[in-house]
Length: 318
Image (tube, rainbow, N blue to C red; front, side):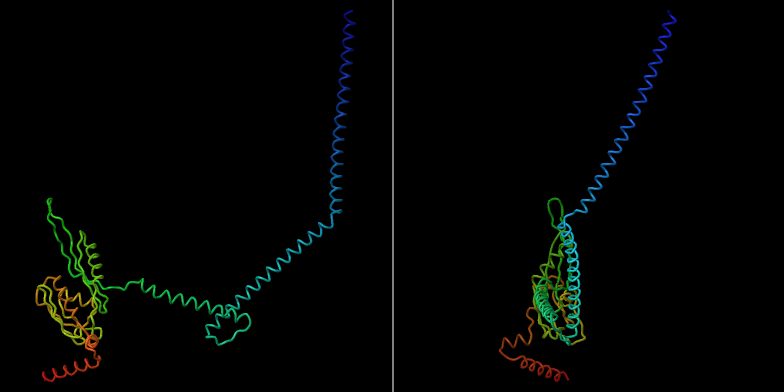
């Protein structure tokens, strides 16, 4: 009995293995068929799409084609217009250059056509620019301050006594002139030297006087000036004499622009009083023009009298 059972079991096992092998074969065949079917479908869809695209390209609307052609033509026209504009601009530049050359040659050559119009426009622009430039010149002259000759006459250290000690400051005396008949003096006091000099120069510029000069080099006549204890004598001199003066008076004459003069200080040697006495003398200075206007005479009459008096003096000396 046991042997029969074993045989039956072996037979059943063989049948099972054979059935499994059959199933595996059938499954593999089915998978291969499915793969081939899928690949064929893909190929069919691709071929159909390519055919449709070809048919669409062949069956395009004529309107679309015409639109594309018109667009390409408009692009070409734009390029042509741009080229024409560039040519016109270059021609205008050449004409303007020729106009400039002709104007530099004082208009010896005559221009015709549009060149004449451009020439007129350029001439008007040049006239306007010249007028603006001429109008701006006086404004620039007003804005530009004349250059002054600054002479430091003296600087002194001053002390102020307070409860805690002494406080020092500096006093400066400055003479300012333009070298052409204008001169002024001023004083300034500050705790530092530069500030004192600046204050003095500002005051001198605000207190300037005009002095008439003979030929721009000397005085017209001799003068005597006095301020407090300062006494000064100023005498005109011939050309080549130079400035014969001492100390503070020399600074005044150099700033004034005098080249030939003889001066003498008789009184104090205090620079403030000497400078003020010199200015008092220069304020009294006059010229033949001023005297003629005052007396109602001509300048020639006054200068003749001066020549006659000078000739009499020379004869008396001889």
